[in-house]
Each structure stands twice: as C-alpha cells, then as structure tokens.
Image (cartoon, rainbow, N blue to C red; front, side, top):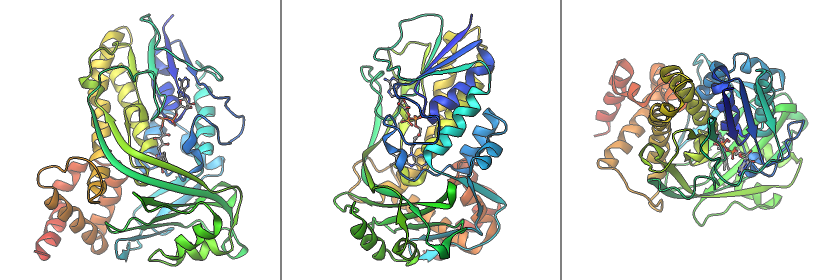
Length: 414
Ligand SMILES: Cc1cc2nc3c(=O)[nH]c(=O)nc-3n(C[C@H](O)[C@H](O)[C@H](O)COP(=O)(O)OP(=O)(O)OC[C@H]3O[C@@H](n4cnc5c(N)ncnc54)[C@H](O)[C@@H]3O)c2cc1C
C-alpha cells in the first residue's frame, strides 16, 4: 500500500497532504499538538495570534490543490476585501491610489484559516490527522514518502548540513483581536501603514471573522511596540496616519496583547544539502521563513505544495526516490520569488545583517520607481499587486508596457 506521512499539521502540512493525496492510498498527518475542533489558537503555532494575511497567489494555489477552498473560507466568515476599494495603504509618504484592480483577498484569523483547511483536507477521504503525536526522530528509510512540515523551529532536519541564507531582521510583532466600536461595525476595511526606511513603525488593521479586527503594530531592532494597551495605543498615535489610532481608541481588546519576536529570516537550500534521504521532503517554513510583514509564509507553503504535486506528476508516484530531485529545486524557485522581494525591503534598513547584492542601490531605485508609477498608472498598480501577491513572477516587471512606464518613472528622477 502506498503511504505518505506528513509531520506537522500547520498550513504547509495541510497543503502538502492535499498535494500528495491523489498519488497515495493513505496519507497520515502527525502533529504534536492537541488540535482543537474549532478555530482556536494552539501552542505548536505560537505565531497564530498575530495578523496572518493570505496573499492572492496563496489563495489561488490552495484553490488549485483543494477546489472549493475559497467558498469554504467565505462560509467560515472570511472577509472579502476588494482591491483596492476596501483597502487603505499608506506607503512611505502617500496613500495608494484607490481603483478597481479586479482582485479581492480573503481575510480571517490564522486559527480560522487552519480550521477550514483541516476540514478541506479531511474531506479528501484518504487523509487522517493524528494529533498529540510528537515526532522526535526522522523516520527510518522505508517505503513511505515523508514530508517534514514542522515550521520555523524545525528540529527534525537540524542535524543535516544544509547551506543556509540568513538575514538578521529583528522584527517584533504585537497584536490583539478587538471588538469594533459601534461606528465601525460592518466595516471591512484593511489598513496598512508601511514606513520608509529607516523608520520602522509599521501598523495593520485586518478585518476578520465575527466582524472583529486583528490589529498588529510592528517594529524593528531596539524599537519595541509596548505590550500594554495604553502603550500600544500611544504607539499607534505616533504613526504618520491617524486611521489606526482612531480605530484603536474605543476598540475593546478581546484578549491580552501578544508579542512575537523574529530575529532572522532564513532560507535553507535543501536542493544543495547532502545526507537528506530522497524520500524525506521539507516544506513551508522548514525551508524558508520570512519577515512576516510581507505576508508570504502561508502562500509560499501553498506554492511549495503545488511544486510537490507537479514533481509527483513529472516523475510518477512509483518512482519516489526521484521526487526530491525534481521537487526541491522547484520549491526553491517558489521561495526565491518571495525572498527576493522581502530581502530587498529588509536590506534597505542599514541595521539588517546580511549580504547586499551587487547593484543593490539601483534595485532600490527601481522598486521606488515602480511604487511611484503604480500611483499614476493602473496597469503598473495591477502588476505591482500581482507580483507582490505571488500571482505573477518578479520577471513580469522586466518587460511589457508596464515595465516601460516604470523605466520612464525611473528616468524622471535621475
Ligand atoms: C509573527 C508572524 C506573523 C506572520 N504573518 C503571516 C502573514 O501575514 N501571512 C502569511 O502567509 N504568513 C505569515 N506568517 C508565517 C506563517 O505563520 C507560516 O509561514 C505558515 O504558517 C506556514 O508555516 P508551516 O506550516 O511551515 O509551520 P507552522 O505553521 O509553524 O506549523 C508547524 C506545525 O508542526 C507541528 N510540529 C512541530 N514540530 C513537530 C514535531 N516534532 N512533531 C509533530 N508535530 C510538530 C506544530 O505543532 C505545527 O502544527 C507569520 C509568521 C509570524 C512568526
């Protein structure tokens, strides 16, 4: 009997189960946590109280893996946020233009996304989830395919010699769920305040299920967001836009404020590692974990899962020893798109530890020109949204009419 085992029932593990299910008779997901029957936070995913944005590319990947996911997310209370009618983004020194880009995103809390995906995966019929089952050693070589989806704190592959790229980002998130004051009930507006480096005061208001808000304030390095309510409100008051502080003023927290510190973004290059069994495949944060302010992790995990499905189609499930050779470079390409974008922004902060690529200053000018061109030209705005949301590759910015408008904008400032 062809079996697959997945360690970790986070977003990557669930997406991996959907990817492999058509090729195996039995798929078992093992997780150390007790998994709740309802959308509740849990210990094994310590970041799940923080804002989690599902990028459009991630939603599309999950829909491809499990048709009906979008409908299931909406049925579970996800808030549909139209781009950009329902969005207010202040970036550097200006509001983004408001126009219809023809896309919408679904916003909800991380426990709610996971709850929906768990149900979707179980509905596939050949997938079972065994919770309260910590896995402490890598399975010995056997016939099964094993996927390691144990997240950014992975220990199972820690002993391997894996070339790793690291950026010292030192980001702190502080978040809480809030009940909206009467005047904001029913408002489905997503608000983001994205600073211009070296300013590091970042803020997000995310509409989530039950007509609540998840509000996150972030900082970098030694600047810390206070974790008491008055301090949190004061930090919001100091942002360059009043919109977040206004909403926080009478909002009622539904639980304590929680902080989460991320010292590093890491990318483990398993495609270049030695000693990894060909039937053991890492996925999700286990491969790459990013600065979360770009909202990429869940979507990259879904992209890795699509790469796994494509690898199984390419080599065939009777040829399991060849899957890794096809899957790992494809997963790495998925990571690369997100990493390039996030690293560009992270490295603009002089205190970020990491190698600046050759021509970095020119790249910064290029991305700044694209930001300005997006304000003026709808086609550049759409392209910037689609690249940032992992719908289109970064290379889409290098050719075509929108690329010419960006080049024109770059020349203008010379
Ligand atoms: C502060 C913060 C904010 C974030 N915001 C966003 C966002 O806005 N958008 C976004 O897309 N991503 C965001 N992310 C990233 C996102 O959380 C992850 O990228 C995403 O959840 C995929 O993670 P994963 O499934 O690989 O790992 P995880 O979600 O960490 O899941 C790992 C699972 O493995 C289990 N496990 C671990 N070890 C073992 C073991 N030995 N045996 C059995 N089970 C085990 C755990 O219990 C858990 O269920 C954020 C991350 C952080 C830290």
